[in-house]
Length: 573
Image (tube, rainbow, N blue to C red; front, side, top):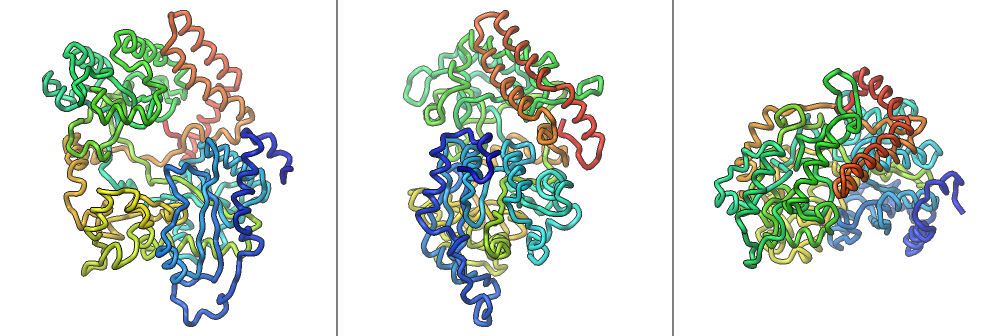
């Protein structure tokens, strides 16, 4: 059934999932077989400079429907056709998990002109899946086509790509200069930030003021606990006049682990590896922090300071509770959420790290998401050229701002000024606004191939969509950033060009076992939070540690030491 029998081992979703992709392709003849009409390719004298070819390009996206949409505006599609000759279509692979969909799609062997998938860094679980496909010849080498592009040719320049993107994702040494995945969301400049965004725990402003609590002073888990005790004793109400559901509620997007809530009790809020005081790289399970964190969480749960469904609550219930003011403290949100533009929730802390005060950390350059072209695609250079058009300023104007005259005008510098009626529609009817078909109103089709070489100020004269038309559009988020002293923290930020500690699992002999053990460790901690006795906690954590050891943790730590000693593979620790 499968193109390569080895894929059957990776296919963890029901067989019907692989049939879904075939059904998706069956709605229209696969463009790799008959949809690549090349009419007009040879005679382009009456075509615009952006013309590519008279053909269809179809993509299959292995990402969540919450992040991307298949729906495209007919007028936008017409603009694409007039400018490039391309009939463009994307479909989202239906699957409970995007990774399962990716595995099923590759296993089917029936792929359209290009695919898109999540890939923040080479340590993402998608990496071994697409890497296996590349090694088996399923993808086209993109390097020859990049040389003649305006934007993607920058990827070939020294220093443009972050280390992990260059050596871990795209130009891996094993491929001898070939690149089979195009890593996206690369910022043009070092340490570039599109927004003054901050995340982590927030507290209801009215409650903080009533108790004379300064949220900025909550910089340790112990101070958070003390504040929670005061809040509980205060008998505060929600927006409907009922007792608040709990002092500490889950993150805005639903229940899960939120290390930022007790960052001084974890080795790293982003991962579980650290260099200890003796200078050795260790896993968190080899430190005292798991027991400290479990004890802290159990104290919060026992004293009814933390919602009992903190780690499991569904997103819709969590969001509803937050909008209703049911939680005095939100474990994790960010300052750009619409409901808080009036600043009725203020950021806490931030809390210190395990062994030092908080310090903002930034990547050398941003990166995230990727696309690839199957080796079965005809004229793959057309897809690269089309991606290059979408990554150009003209292409970005189309997929980020819509159609000139309809959705925006240009100022005397050529920068877009969003029309007020579009902004008003976005506020009043987000669904109708999204139907206009561009990123500014929530339709992100262009990000997949075009969101790279990012610098909004240089390209469009504004950091946020609509800022030029409505300078106060993000007044609330920016006031929160000012309150949090974002500029000061940014000025003192650490900028690093490193690999995620899990980035090297693909070259580790016991990759599958260690990955399973690392996943089990995370789940074991959650179980330990709810354990009924200290004996249970000890057994759960010891079992997780034993599994890590049996899976070769010590050998992997030795590999990390070796990688970190090489300036080309520095590890985030």
